[in-house]
Amino acid sequence: MIKSRRGLVAAIVTLACLTLAGVTFLVGRQPSSQLDEELAAQVTLILEQASPGEHHAHGHSFDSRVVCAVEPFGTEPPGAASLVEVRWVYARHMCAITGESPEWAASVRASGPIAVKIDIPPQVRVPAPGAGYPDRVRQLIPERYHEAAFEEFSDDAAIEAARERFALVSSTAK
Amino acid sequence: MRSFKSAAITAVLVLITTVLMVPTQAQAHGVSMFPGSRTFLCWQDGLRDNGQILPYNPACAAAVNQSGTTPLYNWFAVLRSDGAGRTTGFIPDGQICSGGTGGPYDFSAYNAVRNDWPLTHLTSGATIQMRHSNWAEHPGSFKYYVTKNGWNPNGPLKWSDLEQFGSVTNPPKSGGAGGLNYYYWNAQLPSGKSGRHIIFTHWIRSDSNENFYSCSDVVFDGGNGQVTGVGPGGSSPSPDPNPTITPTDPPPPGACTATWKATDTGWAGHFQGEVTVKNTSTSPINGWTVKWTYSGGQGFEGSPWNGVLTGQPPNVTVKNATHNGQLAPNASATFGFNATGSIPSTAPTLTCSSP
Image (tube, rainbow over all chains, first blue to last red):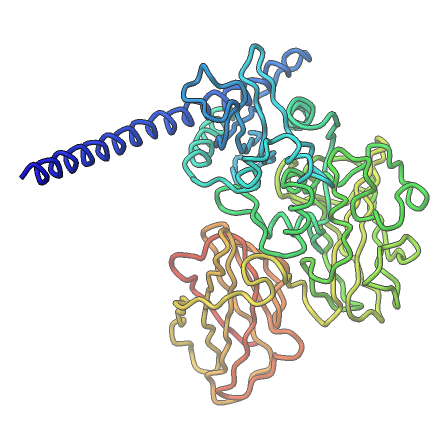
């Protein structure tokens, strides 16, 4: 009887532990995807704002803008759980220039993995395209993210959002 | 205003390259669109509807793996700001297709010696309309070359491999800068050519030292400008399980029918068309003409094969080629084409007449 009662208690404790582990896991996951979203928004802002500021500094004014899609795939430190902890964001990006061509697909752009330091001012590092590009990517991105660095956008949502903003900016710029 | 906008776009490009990428300058732009240069056709090959570049063609994929997608998004920028019309001694042999390595983007991956680059099929001695992107517009001249008979396609392209077959100065343009418009002119291809060759176009600005370089892989095989090696399936687009086949209304006696078939190649913004002409009369016909009107902005990518395009979209007219104009009663001929745009939701109404 005692044995079986002990067994019952053990079973209940095990079950409780499992449930707790599950909940902890889910709770742990939640901030991570939320963090990704926050980082994506932050980096998008950095990329899109860098250009007009720099441009105005050269004394021009123009109706073209840079519109970016960003998908983070890593951080420094690697286990960062909230925005304030993040020093570097590793992300794939695709930036397009609004201009005479109102078509998203035909627009001029830059794309690939980048590293962005969340700082004041932020730093954006982009591996130079051209011969030797994969090596430069591997130098910039920590080894733990090398596989992810060469992957394409996993989700169309970021691109779709950029595409919509591109259409909006293109139509209002005319 | 246009030049202002171009300047603005250029400024942003400079900005992107300087702030976000490499400390270089992009100024003006253009490469050959027909016959399509390596960068133009690779861009077409890899560009997906959502704007990502994911190449299908293995040569294009290798180039993207080696250099990233950013150069290919700037397919029109195979240039040197210090070109000044120079050829041999300035651009090294083996680097002709990238204009060396001193441009704003490094296109050296596109010098690779391979036999699977996108290919344009042409006929030796025929007259073609050459088209050169005017992404940015400039006065200047175009000198065009083809590889000599006996050149080695399995070795790096050398200046001594090329012979010039024409030039043009300040040709007309199809539309404004900043898009897919182009300068165009007619050129007679040299006779006596067969098999694989490269057509090299050198655009030399007259208002600055900036020059542009285009290598177009072609094969002289009797083709009419069809392009292979781009998009899913490359040279043999995968057949559509549900092709749209719409016969035209019964024709008056003594004429012909034309049947439309559009195949979705799985490549967004492109499709392949095929029209079958049948002699439904009781006597032979000598020559046929098929007409239709596009309503959705569709266009041709290259020239139709087994037919001759004589009326441009949206009001399309295609006449028989020399070899398939004579049709006995009940006999049929088929011409095909690569098209840009979406498959018309309702097949266009085709009219067929003879001749």
